[in-house]
Structure formats: structure tokens, C-alpha cells
Length: 420
Image (cartoon, rainbow, N blue to C red):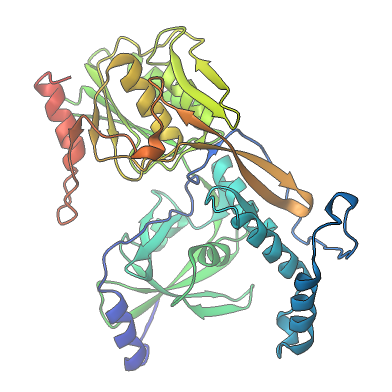
């Protein structure tokens, strides 16, 4: 590690911007808040774009004169010709066209962004193993993954990332004004390669350089521990719904069932942004009866399809509570809603995010991705979470000024007092 100082003017700017609180946390190694039907894409790192100004026969009535007038003007007059990259301009045009619909979940992703989404949904990638987000408007470490290169290098939750250096990529930049996707692209890289993070800790003036060697990161989607005074309450956290979630869930269920002292289960989907819809149905089925409706899918024509339980639930006789908060979205809300509507299982915590649409994710030429909202989903009782999210039966707000987990503590208290 190297320690050095930035100019006083820059440090003053940093200290000013660090005074904010967490406005938004976007975890780059977690699943996105999409309710996916499910797909796997391939990725071409060097896509080529062929520009053909001929209009398809069924689009002859559309006037593209303005588009090409702007294109030609930019191409002719913009002073930095190195920044005029036709493929990027085409991708930007397509992204703008899709965003004009006004649905934040219907998006076009260029190959590089689509690759990140696919890696997240697959649950593994090459990187250093940290969750990053914004503290105020500054890039910060939310938490290093236990056992990851980042943790081994000494990075801590709350560290401010003020600069990133990657000599192989020929990148040496401060993070002021950097977007989260841009930071992700720089920090991630092939196994064995190195990246340097310039870290400021506790708003001190010292800047410390941490050099981290990237490795293959396998992020678990399920964690299990036993809580309570006698450690007889299974606390199972579902972090996201990705390809490996079902197998990890099955392993955790076996560990619960072989523990004779377990008196109940706390299902924790806090800060779970979602993922594959079928994953939520699969996990919900372990608590429900055969034939119970886990979720209802409604298409644009109003046709509804019921997704029913087809297996004998292994945990259907266990006393259960569910923890939710504002970060519980999409598939995590499907799971929580199914358990409450069918089994009257109580939800504890804060109002959920409220994301009740389903996306079909398609691979486009060159490794790009198109995510289209194709339907909405309803809880078994017919409730659409977009109309306010899931309201908990027992509302408990987290106190950000303490290190205690008030919501988990409340769930444990409810088990002890038999308030289920």
C-alpha cells in the first residue's frame, strides 16, 4: 500500500461531497431489479455495425431525414473526430428509441453493459469482490465479499474510492462524476490482472493506494445462519434470484431439516433486487401446498396465467416470518406475497420496492441485449405491487445510526413471544 496526498483544493472538494448520506446503493455484483423470464446470452467483445440508409418496406412512411441530418452534422462539425464512433452512435440511437417508451425496465443494453447483466445473473464473474455504491455523490465500498481479493487486500465497508488505476487498460482516473456502470467496467477484469484503488477512509486527508489482483468471484445467492438466544431459529437470506439460487437453496433446506432444534425460519429478502421469476416460484413452493397459486401473470390482453405449486413443500409445516424492506423488489416480492397470501405468514420490516412487471430478455446481434416488459405479475390475492409495494404486517424501520439489525431482532422477538 502507498500513501500520498492530493492537492488541498481537490481534498476540500472531496470532503464537501462526502457529507451526504447514502442516497442510492446500486450493488454491481447483485442481480438487477428485473423479473426475468430467463435467458442466456453470448458476447462478442468487438461488435461491428454496418450502416445501411435504406428503409425496410414496412417503414417507408417514416421520415428519417432529421436523423441523418443530425448524424451528418455531428460527423462533419464535431471537433474531436476520435470520439465519433459509428457503432456507439448506433447503439445510443437504439437505446434512445427504446427509452422513449418511458418504461425504465424496457431497455436496450450495448454489448459491454449486457455482459455485466449476464455475469450477474450467472452469479459469477472476474473481479475483486466488492459491492460498490454512492455515499452522497461519491463512489464508496458498500462491503467486500468475505474471502474476496478486496477483503484480503484490506478494503473496508465505507471506504471512499477516489481514484482507479489500471495500467493494462491504460486508465488512471479520479471517480468524481463517474457513473456506477463505468466504475464497474474499470474495476472488473480478467483473473490474474491487477487494479489499483485510491481509497480515502474516515474523511482523513490521507489517500491510500490498494493494489488488488482480480480473481474469479462466485457470489452466493443464499446464506444461512442460526439466530436467537439458543440459535434455534434458521435465518436464511436470499440475496438474489440467479441460475445457482435453486441448488444453493436446496443445500440450505437440507441443513435446516437435519437440525432437530430448529423451531422456525426467518426468510430474509431485504435488499434483494430480484432476478428470475421462476426462482421465486420454486422457493415459495417449499412453504406451500400442492395446487396453491404462487404468482399470477397477466399479459397485455388481460389474459391471466396461474403459476401453481407442483411439489410437496419441505418447509410447509415450519413456523415462518419474512423480512422485507425498500430494497426488496420483483422476484423477492413474488416470494413474500405468495407466502403471505397463501399461508398468512407475516411480513416484517419496511414497505417493499414495488416492481410488478415481467421482462423478456432477448439476445441481439453482436452481444447486445433487449429487455422488454411483456406482462405484469400479481400476488395470489390479485394485488399488483406497483400500486404501493408490499406493506409489512409489522413495520420496523432500520436505525442507520446504530449497528444493530432492528428488523431481524424484531423477528426473533416475535418468535420468542409466539407472535406469528
